[in-house]
Length: 300
Ligand SMILES: NC(=O)c1ccc[n+]([C@@H]2O[C@H](COP(=O)([O-])OP(=O)(O)OC[C@H]3O[C@@H](n4cnc5c(N)ncnc54)[C@H](OP(=O)(O)O)[C@@H]3O)[C@@H](O)[C@H]2O)c1
Image (cartoon, rainbow, N blue to C red; front, side, top):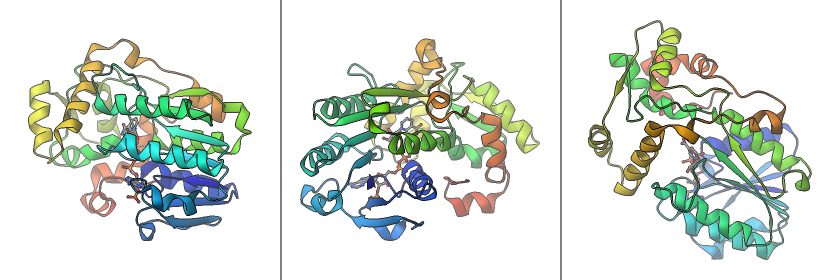
């Protein structure tokens, strides 16, 4: 039995589908299971990682745990609660969705929080595997409206190159690790990137090719990006984390490094950004498709 947290989200929902296709008995955890799909072999359980009293029924009989929560202020506590319950329930393996930059001294709070959870998991005595993805290609869907309206994308990454990864590849890695023998990935950290690092000028050019229009990159200063992000009503810690990431991307170096981990785990090369753009072409070109999808389109 595999327990999937974050099961209503971008990655967890796709992990569910992959496990279902593989015929694996899977339990999906959500605070509101009515929001989720129920493919074959999947059962939903209602639980809240912020409330440990709700967790024992969700973890009963579970062999493996996929651990993910969104970027919320309480992320470390939510995930530590899940790890502690996994210990109590005798779970064999925890696969944690972390982040590329998970380091104790990161300027990004999100990266520091992921690191803190990783340390807690390593100290738990459970068998662990960390998945550390780089920036999701799907983040570009947030810019689809701007692409349609004015033929631009905006970022504060300067001309830094980023090995964007398609969340479908992260999903395939997660499903593989969760169904391979536990010892094959035990105590391993997989750094997940796309196959090539691109700067935003190159991203704009590819989006222009796919959408048959001129798309240009508006390179923002960090201050301009902060002003734009403030209009979205985001908390300061999240804005600060996004801008810290942009600073790393501007500086280049290790953040542009491409890894082979997607291929090594799944036997398939990661999807390219041009393939991602074609698969989501209608979101970048048709207003109705984008509105219905709410900006996050789970194209299979
Ligand atoms: N975007 C990027 O470029 C990027 C890059 C690297 C790493 N990451 C990491 O990826 C993760 C986000 O993945 P995603 O986009 O798939 O997430 P998402 O779509 O935002 O989904 C978040 C999930 O967390 C669950 N959740 C939140 N609070 C919960 C609680 N108290 N109890 C139980 N479940 C709770 C939600 O479930 P319910 O609401 O149904 O309860 C939901 O399914 C973050 O950790 C982020 O740091 C992102």
